[in-house]
Length: 355
Image 1 (tube, rainbow, N blue to C red):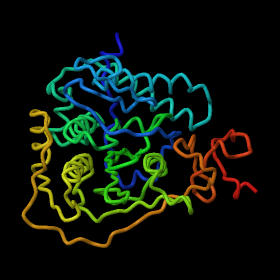
Image 2 (cartoon, rainbow, N blue to C red):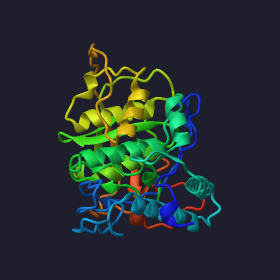
Image 3 (tube, rainbow, N blue to C red):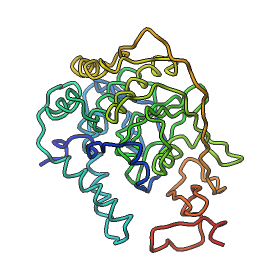
């Protein structure tokens, strides 16, 4: 089997009954930072730039080439990331074991035989059933929607495959207007954005951020942190809440469409009875349009904010390097800045707490 025959992104395990309760069990990931560039996910092959590449290549040809950001190149890139993680999974500690197990499931699902139902977004018959019959959206649905978004709004940064945030290279660092749907590691989809000078997180459950999600956010939006205090402020707009534990992905996509259009989603009330059928229609037509909404407008509650701290003052600039969370103060720091050897038990302490 060739790399190009493999699907572009893995699927996450189906949703647990109580998504909020799942926040107690957090999966940690090792991530790095890359520099983002404007998306160019065009249907044609003109001047496409691969967002997964650390050294983007601009192609002027009208015909697809190996360097272009085509679905096939994305598939190859994703499988290489996944197999790279597996090749480094020789450690026996619990954290490494969980990481290898997660990645093995991802690779297994990449190799499954697929039947394309919507050629424009390359979703399978199983994906269609999940969308139609009320299941939680998988990363196949999420990335299909993000591909449509980056075709329709090529100036937006981000919109990478959600699984990239859980791999060692991690998401690219944003430098301008950006959208990125994130998986928090506990069966829940959220939307992050940078618009109007603010980093925002839109959450249809309103649960606490997991450490995995905080690290993904800092990695993506580090350029917008307060460099004097080494903190990243994340705004939590008051938005519509989902009525079950399965619709988080629908809300994340709906918000992304409206934000890309310049809308204030804090006052929007979507008609959740029509969201699935609308997304299915969008996939069939190969274009995302604003989701159905009710005529009433929400009364907006207070806006909350959360600060993600970074201990290091190393001023590494564009590439932060490997990041971990201190087991004592819970702040994030650079592993490369510590004058100590990595702990065998997988728990880390910053320089202040280790003394």
